[in-house]
Structure formats: C-alpha cells, structure tokens
Image (cartoon, rainbow, N blue to C red; front, side, top):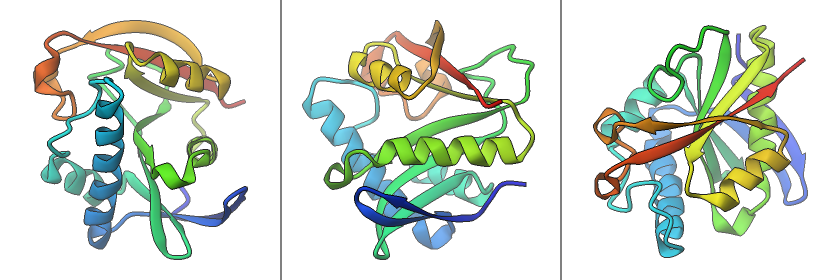
Amino acid sequence: MKPTTEPIATAIGSVEIKLAGPADLDDVLDILNEAARWLAARGINQWPIDGFPRELIAGDISRGEVYVARLDHRPIGTLTLQWSDDLFWPRATEAAGYVHRIAVRRAVRGLGVELLKFAERATAATGRKLLRLDCFAGNAALCGYYERAGFGRRADIEIDPDGDATVPESTGRFFARQFEKSLH
C-alpha cells in the first residue's frame, strides 16, 4: 500500500504531497511543461517543449501513479511513481519503484530531494527494496544530482523515441542513464 498524503517540512515551508486526481491534471501539466521549457532553454533536449501529452498524464493519474506537491495550496512539484517499467528497465526482475517525470517549479528549487525521499518511503511501504529512475544521459547536471541523492549508476541504454511520448521527436537516438537506490 502506498501513502496518498504526506505533509513534510522543508526549508521552503510546509509542503503536502498527495496522490493527484483528475482535477490536478492541468496543474501537473503546467509544472512539467515549465520544467521542459527551462531544460530546453539550457540546451537540454530531454522533454518535449511543445507540451506533455495530456492523455499520457491523465492515464498516469487515473492509475494512481502521479503525486502533486503543494505549498499553501499552490502546486509546486510533481512526480510519477510506478511499479514496473519495461521501456527504461527491460528485463528487470526485482520488485522496485520507478520514478518518472519528477519536476518542481523553479521558485522552489531544492524540493526535488524531498520528492525523492517521499518516493523512497512510498516504495519501501510496499515492501520493495529498490527505487529506480532514469534520465537523459546527456544531462550531466541531473545525473550528478541523482548520484548526490544516493542513487548509483547502473547503465546507459538506448530508448526508441517512438516508445515513449515524452522523448522529444527531434532527438533521434535517445540514451537514458539508469540509476538505482537500495532502500534497506
């Protein structure tokens, strides 16, 4: 069982992380699209700058995989937590949690660490011993960030851009770096 609500105290104040519902779709998309534009402005072609597919995020929300973080009722961050990931972790056999689409508004930089800790607790609460994530292998800053957060690099794998609607079409060949953290 995964928690649906968790208040956390951070350096930026009291943040509440809740399972997203259909009414949160526009807020989640806004946060993701803001992050995608910020990445693109820095020359990092990781996410689609023309907007995340609404139907993809709506489907993730309907499956109970998306969380939204709020500060004073304002949406400030989001993450998707799944229990399998055949595209980015093919042939993985161990039970794990898989983080995708973690993003925070620029005004609350630093919240990402708290979202990762939340994902660790939610995954551990299900009895899983591993938390996994991936990112664009060419995003050195983000790769370093995950390593500083305690995730170990596992491999770089090539992803078929047609297999994931969040991989920019202009990418051509897309290499994802896999990271994993033990939760015991």
